[in-house]
Image (cartoon, rainbow, N blue to C red):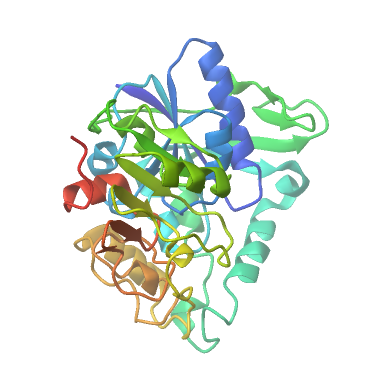
Length: 353
């Protein structure tokens, strides 16, 4: 059994900063620590990579049951830190009822009237672009508040200017009273395959699980020019092209002698980003129920609506206008979203040995 620290809140409260500070503190205490995030793609992942953290993405299917969650948590660590956003979106809230001990990270500027601030921020996010105003079940955008707050919650204040009785992060980004941060026990079950002999290079943001699978992976960070020069002049077993955030970036055609996994199809293909063309016609609690009770791959909303990007066999949000989350052209495997290598291995796209 291992310790799990769940850090949850609405965006922009300091969750990632708090997670990184807690990770360093636990490591200084002699713990082996892994950081976990909901599978929301490349956002924030680069911060963990640059801090040399062990990082893993937890897919939506893991939210169905506690033992399903544990199947996606890698073995071998003493402590795990799970960063989880709390918004009206059921694809985030789906994880919350797996746990009883939650640390709610709160910017101290909003602590005095926290629920009002959360309500206002939720309305800003879920405006009429998402919901028609006459769809009555959707008007309660705070439907998830009770689900979250019926658990044991520990406040962790951030950006605080003076000492606080509980755990907090001050203006210099120092973490205090971390011993009061609540935790619970989990039984990690995931064993990733491992091949230290394969020659692998990578660039951009990509699922960090590849480092466990290929320990000798060389990361070029975001230097695409140096990565491409190495790809052209040397032989590799596998090359990973991660997300760079610039859809205008184009790369020369890759050499044919090895496999390439591409998380940004626009570098080789003329393909458009997905956009939501329709308002959401399904109420949020119903989508929550689908996630919790239906088989993985069950559509979450109508095509063209927000959350329809999850309508695929992995429940991985698709970023581009193509139905398939993964496809292969010649020696290149294109990933339409943050497709974890575990899926690629399972479905025969990626060979480890």
